[in-house]
Amino acid sequence: MSTTPPTGPPSGSSPEPTWHDDHSAGGAPHTPPSPWAAPGAQGAGSAPSTYPSTPPRRRRSGWLVLALVALIVLALGAASMTTFIRDERAPSSLAQSGGLPQGEQAPNAPVAQADASAPDWSATAAAVSPSVVSITVEAGNSGGEGSGVIYDRKGHVLTNNHVIAAGGRGADILVTLADKRVFKARVVGSDAATDLAVIALQNAPDDLRNITPGDDRALQVGQPVMAIGNPLGLSGTVTTGIVSALNRPVVTAQESQAGRSGEGGEPVVTNAIQTSAAINPGNSGGALVDASGKLVGINSAIASMGEGNGGQSGNIGIGFAIPVTEAQSVANQLIEKQVVAHPYLGVQLRNAMATEGSTTRRAAGVAKVLPGTAAAEGGLQAGDAVIAIDGAAVDSALSLTAQVRAREVGTPTTLTIVRDGSRQDVKVTLARKP
Image (cartoon, rainbow, N blue to C red; front, top):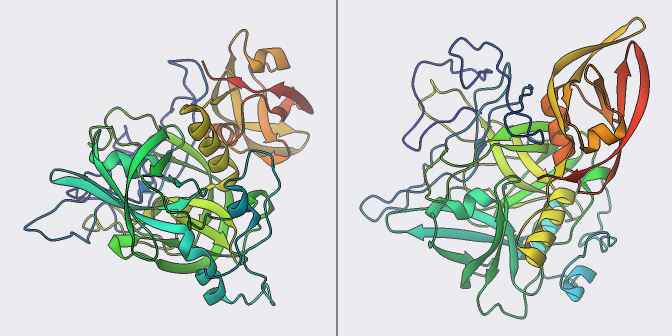
């Protein structure tokens, strides 16, 4: 995705949301690297360009600068939208257990809504707000603000990697709870490839109320959701909207650990939840919950108006969240091992059209299968067109990339392909990315 510096984007682009390429001034198609292919492998795909929703904060004369501007953003693909940028009720079983191990069934919901079609959002906000924190990262005159969710009662907080990277290495991290208590925190582990990180409160209190995880796989387009976080330094802000789309492939660029946007970070490809709930700079790392108060996603990016709109990077009704299934898997690995194993298919991809009988559809085309990989062992061949993965439609190289990245290493996966005009299923087991 293309990006704009903290001082504002270049002028000259249309004020309307548009799609653009990061390397071609005329918007010509560009082929991004396949995130799970071998080094140097090229693929293709398109996705909205996105701003991480917590750009660095700069101080001037002691002011807290609320008008945060967009981080550098990388736009990959032939065409991409201009700029994108996260109670007082009985504790859940997650709170009692101190965390939800991978594979364990999610606990009961914090809120039982009498009418799912007309949720009582006041009840949802009261139940969830104590599990959402504000994060301040400070290093000299630079830093940033973001949000996070209390992951367990041991004091682990899940947030975005770009939130903690805003101040660079050695920055001071302060976490403010909903009741305004402030704690210092340290980084447990971070993963730039998924834009997720876990920090731990120092001297964590024993009354933490951790978030209750839900199931993003049960979400439906049009379902109501609530975003909770710290937009523009306004802690405890709640906004509501709906799930606008699912399985939306979104690409963003990461900050370097030195705190300079766009340097040294690989693109993040997310199989995102798109929402109309208002998300603004500072919401990064905060909670996207359903009406029952269960966490369904970690807010991470927003769509913004074009670069010719004065660098404005506020909400325009298109926000993105990392699905909780992926976030939970990454968080567990960071807490246990401080590193994350990423899935690897072993192909070079391109955008393609697949023709089956009289039907033609968009697909992810296999340009090359690398030897000794999961793709090779599963029987994929160059020229195959992937149209679905585990039943979920695939319409581009980027779409397949996002779907694969959302899975775990060792996961048996079924790819539906079109080969020589005929549909068939290919079974692969995703390996660990070398």
